[in-house]
Image (cartoon, rainbow, N blue to C red):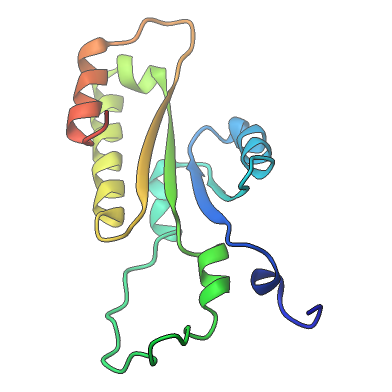
Length: 149
């Protein structure tokens, strides 16, 4: 069994991408790694760089493998490339502050939604709150526009 790669010897692990607020990535990744079941994490410092994680979807080939046979590198792909969750960490300043920052944030979130809409990936928006007051209208809009509960 030791001759097989790690992704075959271990149980499946979900892959989470944490984007934005790089100072929080280490603590979030550590926490997710020690959950049961554990999560692998990929981190990006900026929301605008998400297209690096999500390559365009490939059209499915007409000749699929026979039933009961998995494709080559399928376990590796689902351990390291297929995202289960994309967590966008947003500063409360960009939600409640300058209208230009708000418009930029909305544009970046729309781009993110466009990239993950054809996938099984879920979107989580985390507003990292500082001591400032939050704009409740903008929070409501974030929930409505991104179909969050």
